[in-house]
Length: 339
Ligand SMILES: Nc1ncnc2c1ncn2[C@@H]1O[C@H](COP(=O)(O)OP(=O)(O)OP(=O)(O)O)[C@@H](O)[C@H]1O
Ligand SMILES: [Mg+2]
Image 1 (cartoon, helix red, strand yellow):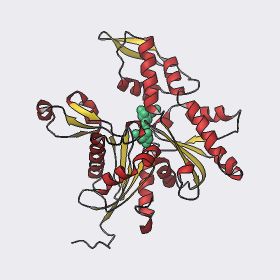
Image 2: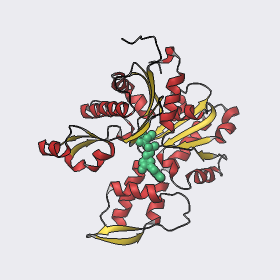
Image 3: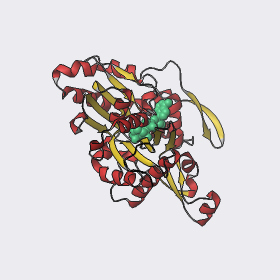
Image 4: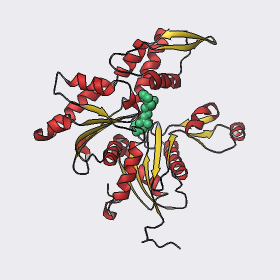
């Protein structure tokens, strides 16, 4: 039997549980990403065709016609009382632990989740992770990002994901609720906007939400674009070329005003002596921080008010999981299960 006081066989794991994409990073150097989809076969034929009882990630998205598909954190919260969402999130966590090589190991896990999820459903999250881990903590995603960057003081982290934009002010301590905000318009909202705009302008083309997301990821920009966005869309089985620059531009700009407003309010509520330092150090993470021109555009938009400096961090997709891993490795014993 292993000695429970020994730390030799411990595996530390950081998990970024995203509304669209989850990432796991471990102390043995593994990193893996899984789209946050869980699907159960719709019937016995689907079960037989798929050859399994449960399907995860990109495979689940791809096989969605044969599955009851769940994206348990869509909208930034684990919907309370929805047993299937709770089952799906527990299954997803189990799968992430498995792909991270954690099965059968003594585990210490830090999970970064959207701030809103933390507020509403911390207990359900803890139970889901607690089933696998000896010790665990659940933290907000931007805090995990900040910790991983070593940015512990005088900074604002804005994580722009699929379901949420999460804000966190770092002032040298563990942030509390007053230092954090969450908005529910992020990448998914851009996809929805783009989808509706394309449907309206080009009703003859067949466009799905998944295609809208891929168009955003490939061509998304804010501000002025150097090039026109010309793409081919399917019309009655044929591919037809369209210029969709305006649709992309307007859809991507949709998330900007609430980000500006929340940044101003959050910094405005901080101690006035520290506000200039915060304004000068605003870091963007998450998948949608990759929208071309975003940091410069936000910086320019703030000029008429109080000048601010927005910058994108490197590796915006994996920074949450790496930060959670750094956090769980450094965590003093007495902090586990407290945060
Ligand atoms: N190159 C890109 N340009 C713009 N958007 C992108 C790009 N790559 C990914 N995205 C978008 O980023 C979002 C996913 O980012 P991320 O993985 O940070 O989200 P998440 O962690 O699942 O969501 P949340 O943080 O809200 O829980 C999706 O909306 C995706 O379409
Ligand atoms: Mg995220």
